[in-house]
Image (cartoon, rainbow, N blue to C red; front, side):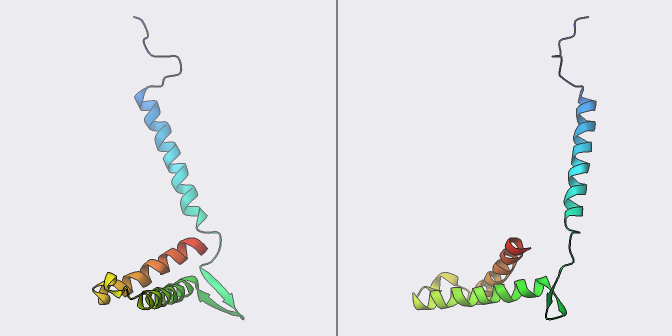
Length: 101
């Protein structure tokens, strides 16, 4: 019987095993990377959670966007306002978290 597989080819079972091993190693590295520091910031001796600063930053950025839209008279873009401003605050909070933490 002639072997038709190239020399460097692996069997499907071996490829699956190597893929699973690589995936397990990658997941272990990603989950342990978050353990490098506590999720709090020291401000004059008191520790505050970092999500608090991200939320404050998101709300402030939402106020800036609101001021710009009011000045340019484009608040109609954000209808209904009851949904758009909280969603903008959430978006900017999560964006701040991604950029700084």
